[in-house]
Image (cartoon, rainbow, N blue to C red; front, side, top):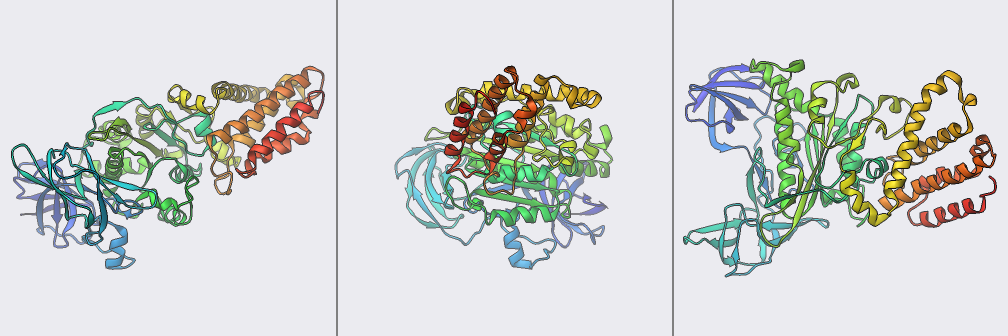
Amino acid sequence: MGKIWRISGPVVIAEEMRGTRVYEVVEVGDARLAGEVIGLEEDKAVIQVYEDTVGLRVGEPVKGTGEILMVELGPGLVGNIFDGTQRSLVTMIEATGDFIERGVRTSPLDRNRKWHFTPSVKAGDQIEEGDIIGTVSETGLVEHRIMAPIGVNGSIQKISEGDYTIEETVALVVDDKGKEKQITLMQRWPARKPRLYKKRLNPENLLITGTRIIDYMFPLALGGKAAIPGGFGTGKTVTLQQMARWAQTQINIYVGCGERGNEMADVLHSFRKLKDPNTGRLLQEKEIFIANTSNMPVVAREISIFIGITIAEYFRDMGYDVLLVADSTSRWAEAMREIGARLEETPGEEGFPTYLGSRLASFYERSGRVECKGRPSRTGSVTVIGAVSPPGADFSEPVTQNTLRIVEALYSLDVALANKRHFPTISWLGSYSLYTDATRKWWSSISPEWSETRNIALKILQQEAELEEILTLVGPESLPEDDKLVLLVARMIREDFLMQNAYHPVDTYTTPRRAHMMLGTIMKFHELAQKLSASGTLVSEIASSRMLQKISRMKEISNEDIDGYIEDLRSDMENQKEGI
């Protein structure tokens, strides 16, 4: 038992703390505020407190718990809402009302709820760590696979089907030394320690997000890592919400790290109504929310990211594909800067700690596609997408630059596009993906022409950018017909394909097959227009064709009718080869 020696905002220094370990969880003050030891010097411990320290006094007691910060993993995670330290906000509201008090202790997972456990092994079977020993139906979309914890190997002595709480023993294992080990529905794992796997694999399948510019132009592979930097008003939060809503993964985790409370409330409200496009069930049945908003204690932002990625790895180990979106890592970095300043650490660029890059890497590098430990043989993946909020949309600032050194896909949000009301504001000139080659085989199963169609579209957009300066000087009428045609087709690609309405019932989500049909139709019109232009038809006549209106309506046609609509559209093109 120590006592408070100094208080500096969320940083508390306690004396008489010999024997304490770094990263040990402690209880600070008479209110028993949750904290974590981040530094030791002689008998003094430096503690970051995860709750508001207003009212703390020097001399109040500090008690070590003997444990490091652990994440509870088990049935009850999916559909739940946690704060930055994995306290269930649903449970806390029931305990304290709408205004959560300091020092409240709640379990992340419900200790009283019973889950029906169905074993997949029997007494006498030999198991190893990571083996799936049974299942629990957690939601209509998620089958929770109960795995033998790391370090548990031996023979099943007892296992039975039935209804259990997460703390009751579902299986008894005897190792080769005769020692008994109990397996429950719940595991605990250190938040900052990556979970173990058998082998790391190369990414090869597309992460389907339903956003055309991402899936088609700059594909992201399952198990990849990406960043979305953008200035204020460019739509970072909406873009991340779209990914969390529609990404075709088995588990989606949304970490609101230091973002506005109303934005987080909007996310939680919308997920109660939206349905999965494949199954028709509520999206909430495969979502996990970590809500650490800007008015919550700043220190909890840092650990909220690691709690989210640990939960993601847990479901990955079951053999699931998991998406984690973090909004935003800039707020997390600002929290580290504040703590570093209070600790009087030597600051790095713009006051950020010198370990900013390594701390970011320790988060992003926990993504990946892996061969999981245990039997049956299975693979799983964690895809990480982090938003970055550079002040003044200055991508040269430290958080953005350190992030770019780590990620392999960049979706750069452009303020100029936002001013033009072009959403999503992902710049086709400033974005890139290193997963294009990795996903080429996957895309070939949809269409062998994907790579060629994509390259032609990007080339036309690049040509448009090169013509803009000339256009400003001489005006559009002075351009040759070939250049006018490039501008026309580029505008069609931008407005009829890249622009996407997140709030339209059809346009909000586009399957890869539909995306290819849409862009392929625009490219077919481009071929027709080139032939007509070569035969003497003016681009102004081509631009006035009613066919352009039909192409622009592709986004609004229902999925049931889109095949027939595009087939009729292409048939019209075949019939108008001689003129518009």
